[in-house]
Length: 374
Image (cartoon, rainbow, N blue to C red; front, side, top):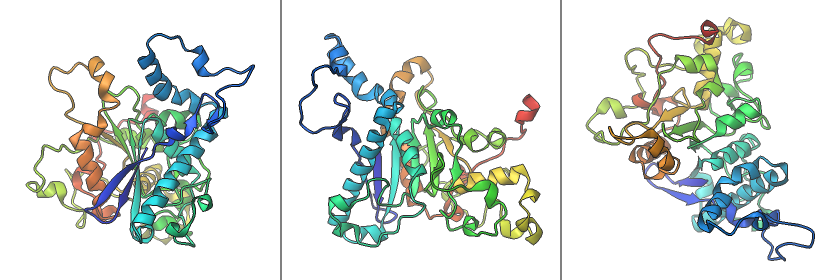
C-alpha cells in the first residue's frame, strides 16, 4: 500500500506503507523479540520442506497473505498493522512538513491485497477526520488505533481482487453520505436514500473518488463497475487508461476540462442534477428511475461516472497472454499510462468540472440489459 501526499497540483510524494514489517505470522502477532515457539506449538517454518527456499519464501511472504487475511485469527492484526504504520508515516511527514495537515491531501494506492485492506479500513473510516490538535504535536501513543488520522481523497485500486471480497461479503460499492460537497449533504435530497450509505457498511468508502486500474492479463485483478449496478455497468463502454504516447499538449480536447460540459459523440454521461428535477421529484424518492439512481451512485463514487479503467496497448502483436500474466500483476509500477493518469487525476481540480473527456463514462450504442439476458 502507498500514500501520496499532495501539497499542490505539481508537488507530490509517494510513501510506501510497509505494514508487513511489523508482523510475524510465525508467532501469530507483532514482533516482540520473544522466543520463536514454545513447547507444544508449531509454526509455518516447521511445516516447510528445506527445498526451493527462495521460492517458498516468496510464497510465504506474498501469496500466503491472502489466506492469512481471510482467517479471523490474523485479520484484525493485519488491519491494525496497516493503520498503525500509515498513521506513523503520516505523523512523521507532518512533523517534517509543518502545515501539511491543513493544506495537503492524501491519496492511497492499494495494490493486490493492499487494495482489499484499504477497502476494509475505509469502510470503517470516519466520513471526515476532524483534528482538534495539530497532528505534528501529538506523540505516537496518542495516534488513533482504529482509523486513519487523515482524510483520503482518492483511492486507486491496482491489480485488485476487491470485487471478490465484495461478492463474498454480499456487498457493493456505495458512496459515503456527506463525503462530497454535493447534494449528498442535503437531507432533502430524495435520491440520497438510494445512493449513499454510512460508516461501517462494507464497501461504503470514506473517499471522494475510487479508481480501479486493471491490466487485461492480470489474473488477480477484477472489475468493479458491476458492484455499483449490474445494469448500469452493462451500458458502459469499456474504458481505457489514456495512452501516454499521446503528446501532452497537442490534443486540446483530450486535456480540456469539463467547464462547458462537452460531449464525446453525444454519449458522454452527465450526473443527475437533483436541483433540475423539480420539487415534486426531489421530495419523492420513488419518482427516480433505476437508471437515474445508478448514474447518481456512480458519479458520487467517481467524478467520471465509472470505476474501471483498463490498461491499453500493453504487450505487442506477438504477446502471449499466458506468458504475460506471469509478470502482469507486478507491472503496473513501470507502466507509463498508469503513472501519467495517476498524476493527472491527483492534480486535477476536484469535482465534475475538473474531469477530462477521455476519462468520462460513455454509453454503448446498443444497451443490453440483464433482464433481457435472463
